[in-house]
Amino acid sequence: MSKICQITGKKAMGGCNVSHSKRHTKRSFDVNLFRRKFYWVEQDAWIELNVSAAGLRTINKIGLDNALKQAAQKGYL
Image (cartoon, rainbow, N blue to C red; front, side):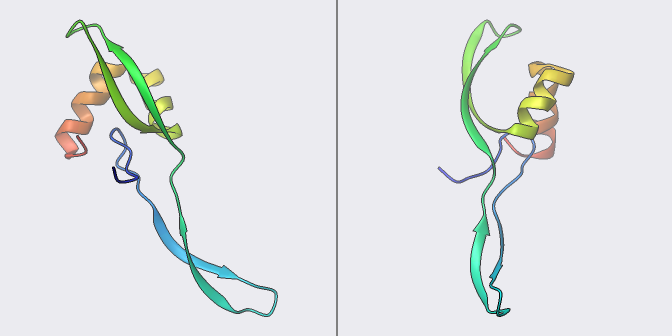
């Protein structure tokens, strides 16, 4: 499974490690992802999502149902 948040759409970025001598080597900045189970009250079911820390805060702020609707609208699910 790819490292993409299913709520916010965040994914790994590329970049460089820069040493003291200013040499650049490629690296990737991974997302802070968690595999979490949520109880979806409207559907009366448990669902499992790959969610970043920002996605967890979004779910806590606006609720699971609204977060899933927004993610589906933006094409993240």
